[in-house]
Length: 157
Image 1: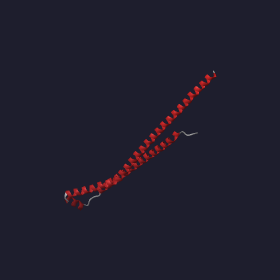
Image 2: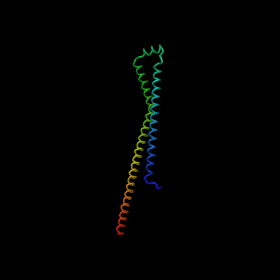
Image 3: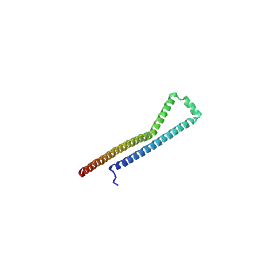
Image 4: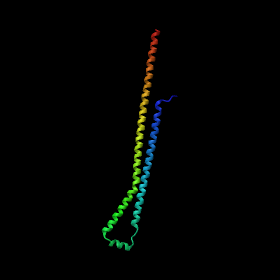
């Protein structure tokens, strides 16, 4: 059986759609893992903060801290807070980069899926046109055959 010319592209379109779906699934998995890692890091930071708060300060140190000017304490606390914020920002950067890459991959997958759908639509349109052409040719042959038959009938009389 001779294969029709429009049978090839839909398989390519299906393959492209499958690749796009796989890329989207992989992107979802990566995003999910990144979110889980971020949650774990956040939980670890919260645990560390709780542990730091729970560590009791010896009495002498506490007296010294109370005698120390408030401004110096505030400055030290602010500096420590700033360091923590910087550390959190640095820890968050790889996750942000990963999320951006995942969004990019998802967009690429969506574009590939759209291209595959367009290719499928184009091949379907081509198939419809070819079918219409075949139908027109068959109809023409039918008309010609009918006319020839009619002509034969006229000649016989």
